[in-house]
Image (cartoon, rainbow, N blue to C red; front, side, top):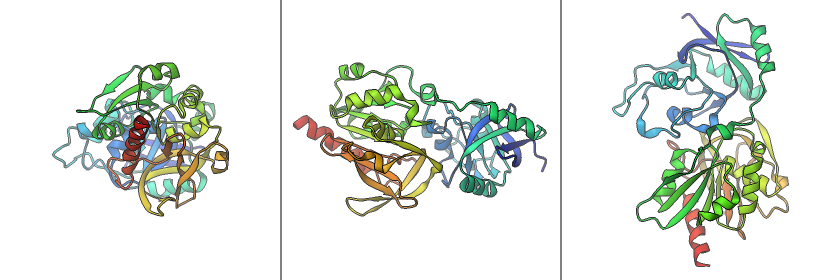
Length: 363
């Protein structure tokens, strides 16, 4: 096999492969890996992967094509997709196009034929880091200079958030939820609609005053890409909303709640990405299998004095996976209870949010 593309790591190591999707151009992204066996369409269309090259550890990718109903966002913003074996002949009655056609449509580079086992080990051992994706004949030194010269973006949420207010109505709705969109997955909206919530989706920089005018029963804070500390305006708005309405945060939303209360976040060595992460719910001792996608975590000792108590922990590394402030009807999780496809162990969290809005209404 003749390789026409390569990945240059920041230490000069190179991984060669064959292009699919967008086949030209030179790019600098952060490289990460995902251990999910299925769900590549949801991964490609998850806004949380903005500016990231995702290495799929499962070897065969593309075999069931792309289905219209399974997108998590209207316009995918993932940096790149790296796979071992790309299948360009999908077998699935729901498929309307191939994965390669989707990537090409949105200008997303893909690389197949890569030794993804070795690459994943490198990320695991040395951490997520910046890489250059380029033609196979590009000099290594040139790629390293490009990595060094490329600034780390700090505007990812601004790029993927809604630009205007949107609505998603539920039949016979009982509750009105304002969802602050920092890069929200669409299945979150579906889960809220299914439980009788009208959802008003607002941009990440919507002010406290604008949200209050919408008279919500509850506030939802979405997932999203990048460093949570980059979102100063959103953090200030969350701080003002805290305690005024029941509040539920997922992933980035979880981190923003912690920061709004004076907590701190930090970057993990290689993050959590996959559909098989065990999380312990401290209240019951029950273990939930969860879907995850994040680079940052909440520093547990920073929660002292914030009113937030740890409710869930990751059994692989002990990181904070959930928090709750009972007095102010606020809770959040680092993982994805709406995961699609993925484990459904944590769907009860949406019901908890409904119960808090009902309690607040009857108070």
